[in-house]
Length: 125
View 1: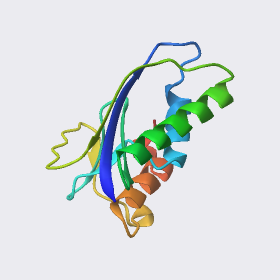
View 2: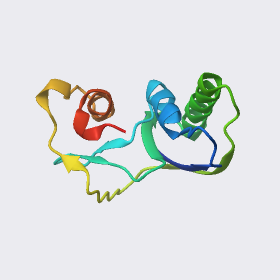
View 3: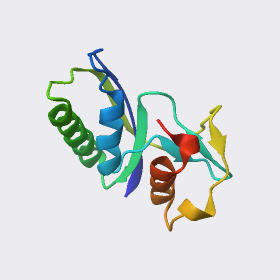
C-alpha cells in the first residue's frame, strides 16, 4: 500500500459540485487533511490523498466518488484535469494546520486524517 495524491479540476457547474464530491471521496478513502508528522494540515483546494495498493486503485476510488457525487447532484460532473501520483518525499505548507486531537487519532495516518476531516470543525470544508 502506498500514499497517492490526486489533484483535479472540474468544469464549474451550478450548483457547485465540490462539497458533494469531497463527501463522496471521503467515503472512498480520499481526504483533504494530511498528516505532516508534527501536525495535520489542509491540502490545497481540489487536492486529496489516500492509501491504495496502486495507481489504478486510486483512480478507481476517484471515479467511484465522482459517480456518487453525480448521482447525488442529479447531473454530470465534467472532469477537466486530474493528476494522480504516488507520494514520496512530500512537503506540505498550509495556513490551515493544527496538532492531532486525541479524540480523532487512530491507528493509521489515513484514518487519523479521515477522522479529523469528518469530525473536527477546524477542518470543515
